[in-house]
Length: 624
Image 1: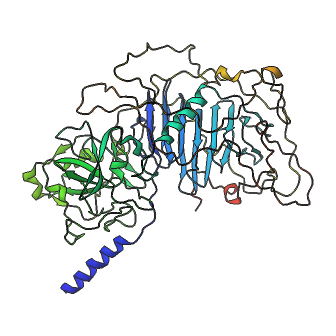
Image 2: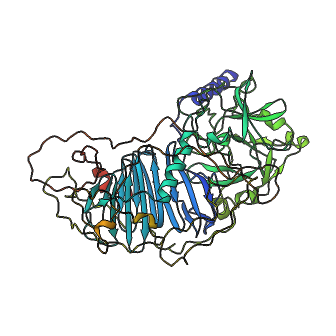
Image 3: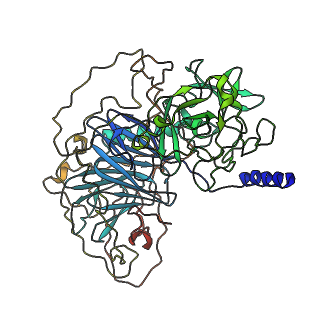
């Protein structure tokens, strides 16, 4: 009998060594400024958004007046929203990322695609993206404006199934309930908001740290908020600065319930992403340090790298950071309760002893004030009533062999955050506004038959007023020793409608060149139409790291500016040309493309919309 038990334990450990499905990191709410609200299905109402929140399908974000937020979609992919913008995540997996914009201004700066396909759904149309580039969306009650730059190309689909392939450096205005798509125009010169997005991405991509994988979001923050040492036992170890002697991992933040991963940790520190979803925490010379371990091919994301434990009777829920080599017992998915070292490249053991998953032990649970706990009733409701377990009581607490099993109350879906502002267009979500037709569409270049004759004079959207600067733009906070400039009131009273294109768009054309097939928009003269400039790669050197001024004294002073680090992949300075299609015997077709002056003429656009999309994939359903 004893031998059978040993064999079973060995099999369990071997299963933990087998590679499970790769757990890619979810989108991260990396930065926010002003009043930003968050809504997760099940929460019941909007709450204040929290930095470092892992985002899931169904989550919605809203930036109030003079507010903005930034989402890291992938290692080199970012979404940034200006004020009065409501954004909802639809399908979210490695095949497709769907974003639904009910209103406002959104920029997607994609040095690489975060999924095979990105779809942006607005009340006017659905925009399908399968190529890296820069995409800007202006959405209001009248329609949607799309601007493509830096090699970005998209397929635009109306609700009736008609659509158009839009090339790079183009502008397309789409009216709500439009039956036809207008011809694209040449994109205007980049304005202040575009240039700020370019500079922001360049700053985030410039940081490079050979110790960590690019997929670890926020790893560039570690050099600014701590130091690295080389330990004889653990290799490279990062020591955070500014933490008090009483600090312990997973003690300053909140738990939020994630529909895919269950209970997930949101740390309050600006560097609080990578050290709490990867690696292990160790003690070096009496201090806490984060050890990423030897590099692996692809690190696996975990909602938190902790062990769960509690007292007899289950009146409280406790957690403690995992130590060097300790396996994680997943509390989510099909691998629940199975020892797992996903993405861990270091040794797999427990303090040199055999690990028994039925009676797990955690080395840090025996350390003073390392175990954090909360009353169970408050934990599931999102209340942040966290306490430290006295060492003399730790012997009475038993680890949970299958992780935590506690269903959340509505507050648990919001992390217990305070109430946030509700968007004015909360009921005007774009789901289904640009529904994909089931039948093949005749307008794409690869379809048989001649395309429809698209109206060449676009129906212009009403001009949007200039964008109001946020209260304090993230990434541009002045250092603490410099005086802050006086706050400026907005130059206009924000109307009920959304914000318009900045006045920088009204630039004079240069050399009189207007691009192929260019038709001036209604109400503007040809000489007032802007002449495009092709941005050659990522401009502007990275800024020095700003410093953060906490609103109230705290044991840690973290700057309110986070930057990621990725440099290996840059945007091309020219549009990458596509191979020409094979000649086919079919009627000649008209195709409107806009490309920068002086660049070689791209060939016919290859198809990028497959039949699975047109059969309804992307309406919140999985493409699998």
